[in-house]
Amino acid sequence: MLSSCAGGPPRNPETAPVLATPGAPTDTAPATIAEDMGPLPPMLQQAKSRWVPVRWSALPGFADDALYEAWNAWIKSCERPGAVFAPLCPDIRVLSLASGAQQREWMLQRLQPYRVEPLGTVGDGLLTGYFEPVMQASRTRSPDFQIPLYRPPPGLADRKPWFTRQEIDTLPEARAALRGQEIAWLSDPVDALVLQIQGSGRLRMIEPGGAQRTVRMAFAATNNQPYASVGRWLLDRGQVADASWPAIKNWVAQNPQRLNDMLWSNPRTVFFREEPLSDLDAGFGPRGAQGVPLTPGRSIAVDRESIPYGTPVWLVSPGPVVELRRLVLAQDTGSAITGALRADYFAGWGPQAGELAGRLKQPLQLWVLWPK
Image 1 (tube, rainbow, N blue to C red):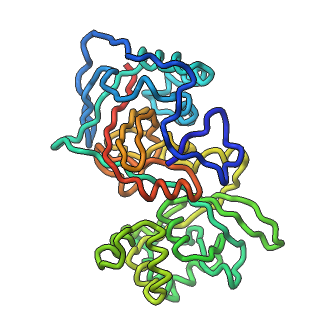
Image 2: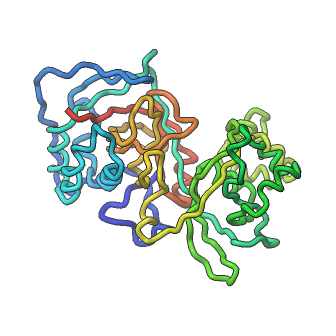
Image 3: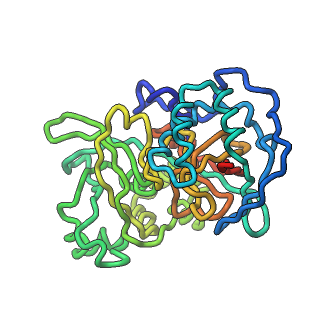
C-alpha cells in the first residue's frame, strides 16, 4: 500500500499515488538510539496478544524512518483518540511542524515499545494489503453500465442473514426489495466484486447530463452472509495458478458461462453510501473502523482485541514485495484480520495501489508504542 501524503494531499490524488518504499528522512537521523537503561515495565496482556517490553534499539530501522510521513495519520487518530492517547494529542499536533529528530526524541521520552506476541506459540505474522479502487460508473443504467451498486435496502435489519448474492440475483423477492436502491451502475461485475471486497472506492461518475465528478462509495452494511474468497474457489478447482485480480479477470474472459458460479461462491455482498469527495478528502482514504480517514502507507487494519484503535505501531515486514520498516497507526479492522500478528496495510487508491495490495503477502513483526 502507498507512501503517505506528507505536508498535504498529492497534486493529483486520483492518478498519482506513490509506491510504498521507505522514505528518506528529512534530517540526519542518529546512528544509534540513546538507551534508557532503567528497568523495563511489566509485560501487558490483551485478549488476543501479549506485549513484551523492549528497548528502542530492538526496533529495526527506527532511526531511519521518515516519521513526518506518519504524522498526518497520527493527527487523524487524534480526531477520535482513545482515553490513553488523548493526553498526548496536543503534543502530537504541535510536533507536526517539528523536525524528524525532534519527533523521534519526543517518542523516546513519552512512549514505551512492546513487542506484540500471540498468546500461544510465537511464529511469523502475516501482512496483507488493501486499497481503494477507482472505477468508471454511471448514475443511470445503460447498455454499457448494467451492474448495480446498492444502498442498504429498507428492512435489512429485519432479516438476518439477508438474501445471499445468488438470491439477490435470482429471487423476485430480493430484487423487489432492492428496486430503487441503486446508487450507481458499473460495467464489469468483477469490478463490483472488487469494490465490495475492499469495502469502499472512488467512482468517476457520469451524471445524467453527461458531466463527470468523482465521489466515494463508502461501506454502509452487508447482507450478514459469510465471506468466501472467489480466488480460493478458483484455486481449489485448479482453474488458476495465481489468484490475483488480473488472473481472475482473465479467467472470466475465457469462461464467461461460469461467471455466476464464481460470483455466487461468495454469498456476502456489501451495500454502500455515497460521500462527496472534496480536494482535502481526496488526499486521504476512506474512514476506517476508528472513524478517521486512512493515510496511504501509514494506516493498518488490525484485530482490535490485540491492538486498540489509534495505537502507533512499529511495523517490520521483509519483502519479497516491499521492504517495510515504518511507523503506522492502527486505524481499521477487517473480517479476515484476526490474531496478534496479523495486519492489513492500506496501500492507497487506484491501479498502482491495487497491484501492490494484491501481491502483498509476507512475514510481519509488530511493536506497539504505548504511553509511559
